[in-house]
Image (cartoon, rainbow, N blue to C red; front, side, top):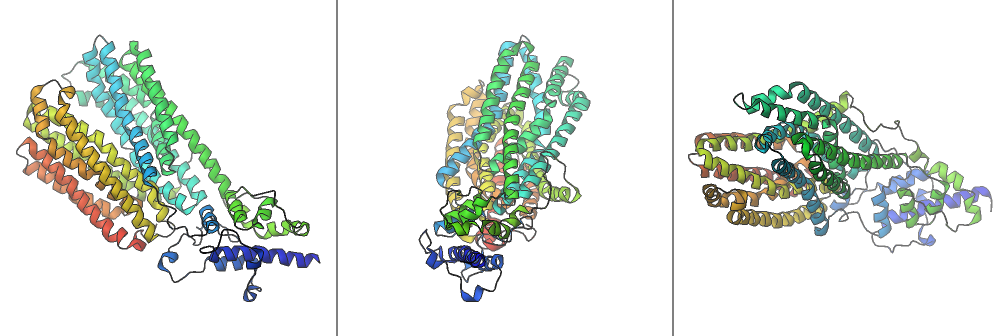
Length: 604
């Protein structure tokens, strides 16, 4: 057979297999025979890549299929010959659509949220260990424990103010993972890590330059000068690793956005061991020893997560390049399994093919994978700073999150300030109740993280109505279970374990008296985080800002003019929770559930 005839035959076989699988795989068996892979005569005149493109991008009349992820790739993915992603090829090979494959199971939700909770509650528990060790080992324990309060408040507050970067990381990484835009994944990761390093350096400079006067203002001039000195030295040591701490926030949420809970869990475990051992070993240094132990733990945990992020970024680079071999073309000749192998970058090399066809692999490689090798843009460094356009885009994303975060801090702080008007006993009870409240809110906050990590899979490149509704339904069921658990658990803790939290009987009685309002507020919290996380994932920031503006005005007004007793403060908290849930829930119901195709803004 002439060489030209063999080339035509080989091209026809490949085109036929790809076309047949893209249309008939929904009802056909997993294996396709050569007899079914015959190209329609009307398509003979079309070039090979165009025939594949036209067939794959062909839309049907079914509403769900029009929102299927089998759509044109993003601008950064210049793949014209085979516009298939890993999940697309796997879906076709499996004989079904991609709809439904994005749904997390209840077991996956439980594992993800449980691990996230353990990661987040580790920090307050380790702070408790620091306080305990210092209190038990130092002669002037009262002074040092008292100094720990303002010291940790200053350094932790400054670091927490940068957490909007971590929130932006979750939103951006989850989006581009769903789009499989590996170039943007590298760019976003590099730039946000770079900004995190810069903000960390600013915190270091602020603490080293203005830490002492700030602490003096917080503690007051009437207190012992030794108190200010101890607190300042603690902050100076912790601030020395602030850049790594902020980068650790970003790296942690990067892992969680990739649904990687093992790496943060390993990092937290390592940090916990180092912190506890360091507290004991360096106890002779008192507060300074505790600061050194915490700093070393920060370095260890951040290093573990940054190494994982670096490896993942290198993997994204390889996926961007789409490196192929002659074996890719060979594996393509093997049907659906070959398609998946080419896309996933692990082609089947040991394929039995006619010897004459093997001579044409070089020509096939020129036609098929060449466009995958042609990628614009050089390798992105691990750390970089955004250009003007990227910085503006980051501000548009992180600005609303920063506003939301400040709004929450302001509302909770206003409650504590208002509680000072009702006596020392009520203030002590309020302090303990808020500590319990924030501990259990970690359970609800994990749902926001889970929503932002999983939901984009059903949002990009186009929202899939069926998957969105099913996913939100599962999140709702899971939120109900979490809400009932934390509501009942908090009520039991405050009603029965109050004596373990304080030895003052009046405070214990006050806590037990106001337990109901706290437990009701916690019952609503998982649903608030579910809806807030959904709005964040759909980038509905304008609605979030307006909702929080209304909520804050109502919250401050009620605290200032309607609180005539300590119980009224907790009534205001319950109204604060209820208002947020009403506003967020109505928006999610009207925009995401009823009109899923309009869930994303046009700019997204």
